[in-house]
Length: 186
Ligand SMILES: O=C(O)CCC(=O)C(=O)O
Ligand SMILES: [Fe+2]
Image (cartoon, rainbow, N blue to C red; front, side, top):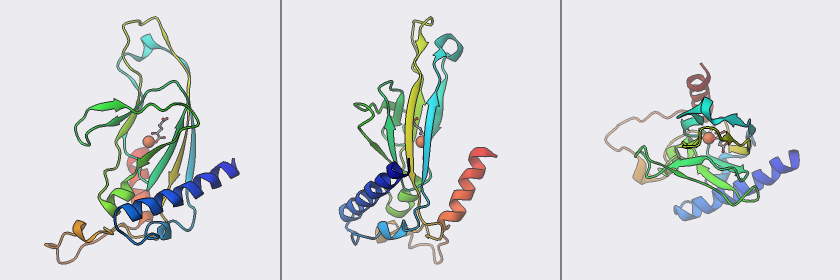
């Protein structure tokens, strides 16, 4: 488990460097905000279910992840959907070829730093006419790359600054984390 965690961290840093390069930022701009490795791993098990008990239900309601990026691994069952285009309310399948493939989600902190859209996603239990059928069990692993708690969530690109505001106030990652946890679990 700990070696998987550290492989994910290595991949996270490479992805953050690639995003920095892509946005024209100094290569280590994002990496430098992720030195304390305060990341999280979630192993999810969705039990097999009788479809008749879950008409119109979802396995996880639509949400955005609130870290920087999420590395998501899933089995072959499917059900993961992403809102496309952002804000449209239309969800499209984000199926992968299997557990060896990794889906990279943009999270809220990366959106605040760069303006890239935080991916709204859900795990759906698609409607079926065959109400007698069972929905198979499903496994997923989500690695949530989180910013250092002291990092300030302010735009890293000048184009994102609101110059009409004389003083702009930004949350620290710690404040944002607590805000989102309170909103999710309160
Ligand atoms: O199980 C999945 O594929 C997604 C899980 C997820 O979105 C989450 O844990 O935030
Ligand atoms: Fe998620």
